[in-house]
Length: 310
Length: 321
Image (cartoon, rainbow over all chains, first blue to last red; front, side, top):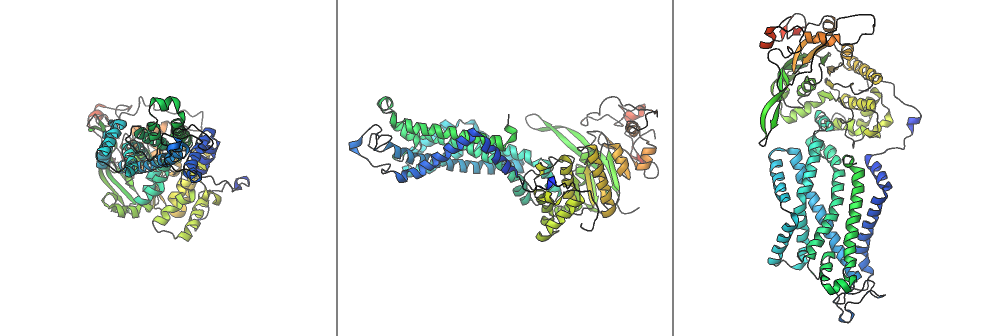
């Protein structure tokens, strides 16, 4: 090729030589995300929530399940910042411990359902045909059943089968991913369907690139923004679902604390009216986490997924 | 006559129309209906026709980017549609396509240098050390600068992007380039640059083009032979000089009479076609053009005209010629 001389005169002006602007789409997206105040506030709250829940208990003089009969139902004071519960356990420590469980369940079930959903959705969208039909019909079937009753039934079955309480946390993660993957698979399939028809994918075929290279170099990087957005929005939903399940006594079982079963423990008139320190802190944590995650996710979507923009 | 580089024989491409609950095929769009083109090495074959006449589909089926319905395509005597996928993939660098839309044909997340160089690596046409030099060479050949190599497609204008697309095809040293309206998305000054680049590359590299366009003046400037398509069929093929001097098919006449000429005082007969191009899912009987043809006779509606040899390099599908 170098033997060929000639060609067009290059547009080589001194101004255009400013070679510091190597802006990938990722760098551009990050810059715009940093400018979105609401999303950044959400991101900071989520980060704080994680930090407090995972590091906080290390500094607490109490443990989550140390029972103290002399300290039952004490309102907030200098020794117990958020008071104590009916068994004399420190509420602040328990809220932080519960956060560990709730956030872990939320994060893990998000990872699992995004993995499952995007894998199945990508297979369905890329290979079409029978695989598409089978995967999407199973997904449709799951989507037609309202997820909450389905979770209730599955949760009740678990109680019936006498699953040890320590293992329930992992089973709740599986349950949540099981009901969440079809929605994700649909979105991913739609995106893959539109991406594979794009001209740059055809160009990859014309260039004779291997299927692996087409998939991993050209298709997947264009799918990542959507996955990030789905994942971030999914955490909030998963945290909420776990809390709902635990509140109804079908999720993670006491004494392991979660935000949901802490509220459930305060689910009587006297606690509700006279001991707000038992249910406000976990309730606020659920509220703050879900709102913050969604704000951050919305910000990410605005930045990464231009199609969804107003 | 030398051995043809690309021999398209009786090519047909029908797209099924599906509808209803069971996705049954209720009809077919005959995008390409029995087309034969022979392209010799080193020539530029222009394919013209209005929107929806099936030009692009011919281009894409000619390099097996989409599957055919019927017919044969032979590249240097090798039947493209008989090749197993791996063999076809190895042959791909020889047959390149330049896309019409410079925006959607570049992956937004791949740097220009990678986009141009990756196929070289994939096919083992260059070692890792050589790739950068090869890419730089082809960039400068296409009028782009060396510092563009690390940039992303969104940092370029439409004309620059089209040149990146051309560079991506050229770096593989192809023998045939199917150019699918490569300049229609560009403004006129850039068009001229790109077309001159095409010409120069043909002189230096002996490239062969299948040049698809609806711009007759571009085709006249660039092509040695021209085929005129109407509704999935070939109306007329001829050498450029013959076609532009004396068009035989009424459709070609109408097309040429619509080309503006830069002499205001010169009056000439203008053939204005009535109506739109008919629905390709339900083409007219007989000669597909008879519904809009100013010279149509009764026979045209009944009998489909054969694509006949009428001397020299001319072929025409018309009863009246």
